[in-house]
Structures are given as structure tokens and as C-alpha cells.
Image (cartoon, rainbow, N blue to C red; front, top):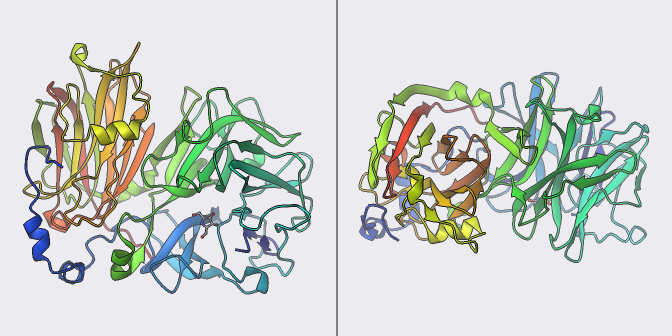
Length: 543
Ligand code: DQQ
């Protein structure tokens, strides 16, 4: 483990179908394209993003050390300066005044000493006053025979916080066999660190914990809480671990004992696969920071590609960052809500607002006058006719599996209804994000799905379907969906940010001005669109 600074400290580990509307895909079109090279040159990088952060070329993975310092936002990220696949990892660096437009800076951290020979891997930043230099005292923490930590199981330190006992605390992800662990380290001077005898947290059968994140949330407001001013009756804690085994980010909500330095999830808040995820699609190695300028907690997350490695090499880049999300505790106290930062709305242009409309079963409504490959859309549905809702079999506990069995083309009663994004003119390609409503034991259950199975005529992409249950009561609440659409990414927020789902897709036909956006209802019962607003999104200055 290494620190950087005199005063501003960085840490990083040293080692180390079927068509919904019965249209068959035209494979002919794909076959006539000799190869993707020809396609790429003909259309000049149709899958690069217009407003999602990415470097001009090469590989990017985890966001590292995000912060605001003297009014400037900083984002560091895991980067390979030499190619579009993982390797040669350094911390690249960009800055911004608005979290939307970014200016590249020189590489921030790279292997400059023997102990860091294998790269500058993920970690966090803690702000002290003054300078910004790498400390010669590195490495300050390391896996050793004495502490019996395996070198491959010592990962990604958190931002430090200062305890009332005057000691700095940092958490490191690890595992012993299948048990995920969060080691706590303490220091009085930020140079000499001692591993605590007690773990901050651990959980059986979760495997390696990467990129752990630990922060307070207010129980009665959406305002963020600074880790350094944490205690009080109105604060709970969030603990997030990125599980290496599943490549998803899971979190629990609970209590932190600042004397014992132990975190305990609330009853019913469980680590791992039966618990909550930040995102039910692609979103990994996330990292939060407290934005002191706007008193909010902001979450960054890496969205990797669903394309093949050879396609990544051909296009010359891999990996984007999700639009930063504000996160706060839901009034239930049981889960977080996530919403794209307000600043992203500065890119909205040419608003299209459609009037309230009943969407009959089996119908499609095109959203006109929008640049559908680079757009922001918000849609709200009101559902009636609950008597006819399909029953939820008690064994249907896995929402992703349920979504893959009941994709957009499988007609139901209440649903599927939602959005068709990146749709080609003849519907040979589309990605569908939608809801289905089931009758559960004593309540109606809302399922949200992102179905990529028809997203591209290119057969080489991972087209896994994603799914999650959304904790809303459709009888008394409207069902909302917002999707940020950006050439090869669809970031969707269901139930006002209760369930989020991000997909990477690579249409061949539905690109640029040939992409279309529709609302659809493939259930037998009608639903009412109470609101549909869409905006074309301007391009951001991304590096
Ligand atoms: N990526 C980094 C590790 C981290 C993993 C390596 C998560 O530090 O654990 O580049 O994507």
C-alpha cells in the first residue's frame, strides 16, 4: 500500500428472438457488412459516447479518488496508456467545474518505485490542506507474512476518516477463502498504520471484496453527510463491496460503532446476492465522495463493455463511466435512491413533451423530434385493471431470471410496457427497458427489465438480460422510468431511482440519426402514459 503526499494523501495497492411485434431480424444486412472494420470506418465510431465520461482512447476501468478540491472536481481512473485491454495500469486524471465537461490532466500516479512495479491500482483520496506529491514513505501498508494477508487479497483502500479518538481510519477489501472481509487500519500520523484486531465488517460466501466504500447517510433528508462529521442520531451508514466473483456492487444499510470501529447491517439488510445492488446491469468498482460545494453524496461507477475483446481492440477503447449519481437514503430507511446529477440537464435541448395518452395493449408510440441515439427520456405510467394481473409464482425470486424468461416479446397482462431505445426503422434492432406487474401474496409486485437480446445484429456481443424488483406500490403510485441514452449505453432509473439498470449495446442499424425511440405496451391491458418528456442531449466536452 502506498501513500502520496505531503498533505493530500492517495492510497493504492502496490501489487499489484423474437421481435416484439413479430418482425424478424434481417441477418442479411449484417452479412453484407464484410466485417466490423468496414462498418467502423463507414460510420466513424458510432458507439463512442457523447456525454458519458471516457478517455480519447484505450482501456479505462475503476473510478479512483473522486473529490472536489478548491471548487474543482477531480476524477482519477484506472487506465492503460498503451492499449484497449487491461494492463500497464496507472491513475489517469481529469478535472471539471461541473461534473459534465472534463479537461484531461497529466497522469497522476504511475509506478515510479520498485514496490509499485505491477501498476497503480485502485484506491481513494483523502484531502489534507497544502500540496500534492507522492510520499517517499511509501509503501505504508502491505500484505506481509506477519499480518498473514495474502498479497492477492489486499485491495483498494477507502477514503480515510478521522475518529473522535484522534486516529485516522481506512478500510481495505480482502477475503479468507469464500468469506469477504473489510480490514480496518488506524493511524495517528497517516504514515504509520496498524491493522485493528477486529474487522470493520465481513460476510460469508461473498468472495473477494474489491473497492469497498463506507459512508454516512442522513435518515431524514437527501442532503449528503461528510464522513468527517459523522456521528449523531440522524445518521445511518452504507457499506458497499464490489464482489469479484459476480462483478456487481452490493450494499447494506446499517449502524457503525465508532468506538469498536465495527459496522453492523440492519436486520433484513444482507450482503451479497440476496441483498441490494447499486445497479442491476453493468456498474462496478464504484466510489462515492461528499461534494462539500453542494452538500450531496455523489457516486461514480465503471461501466465495462459488452462487446468482444477483438471489437474493443478494433475500436481502440474500452470502458466508460456512468453519469455521476446523487445518492441518499429512501424514507423507508432500507435502501438508497439514486438520481443523475442535476448538472447533466444542462445538455438537454429541444424538449419534446407528449400529452397524456392511453397506450393500448400491443401498441407502439414513437417519440418524435429527438436525437434518439443521444437522449434523456422520462416516462411515467398509471396502471389500472389490477384484477387481471398475472400471478407471481412464489418460486420466482430471481428477477434477472424472470426477465430473461419473460423478455419484451413475451406478452403478459400488465406489461411488458416501457421504452424501446436504439430501435432501427424496421425494428430489426431495439433494446427494451420495461415493467411488468404481478399479483403477489398480499401486494402487487413490480418487475423492471432491460432486455438486450435484440439490441444488435452483431452476434458477438454479450446480450444478457437484466432484471430487478422495484419497491413501489403501483396501485397508489405512478411508475416512472428515466433512461439516459448515449450511443452504446442505456442507464435506466426505475421508481424515481429505486432500481437502476445499465446496459451496453452496439446497434449496427440503429445508430446516430437512424436510431429511434418509442414507448410500447406489449401487455394485453392498456396502461396510461401520464408523462413523457424527452430531450436531445448536446455533446459534452469529454477530455
Ligand atoms: N480493479 C483494480 C483493482 C480492483 C479491481 C485493478 C476492480 O484494484 O480491485 O485495476 O475492478
